[in-house]
Length: 132
Image (cartoon, rainbow, N blue to C red; front, side, top):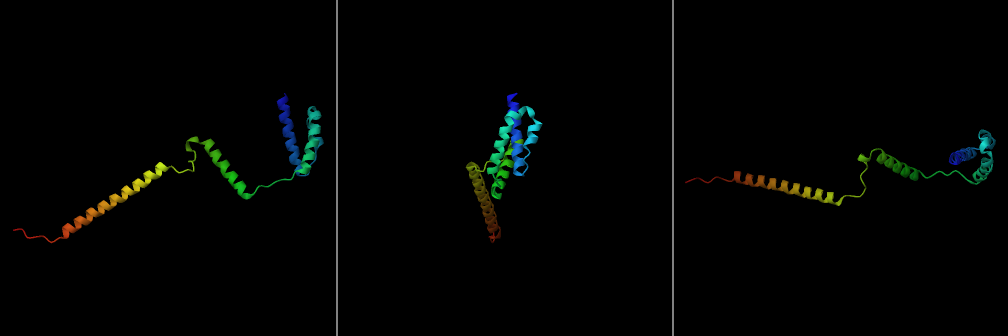
């Protein structure tokens, strides 16, 4: 039962701290809702109130929020569909070499076809010699 009480107290303190940021100090409401936790809860509510007096809300920069959102969406996407996981950002050097070799091979093939056509054009336009 101790773990349940710790979780409940932590949740209550979190809720109380949030309300304090909005100016609502209703510690008596929390104590009335859970009288069995009163001995543990009362000093913790007082501590939360003292800490909240020193804390100020922080708003992260827009760039940080965008980066965080992008990272969270990518992580969620990977977790939901592992077979469709995003490729790593590093380039695959073997793939680059294969693409380069294929491009060179295609260029050589095109040059070969053009040379063949050019050679056949020259032969067909040559004057014919009379046969004797």
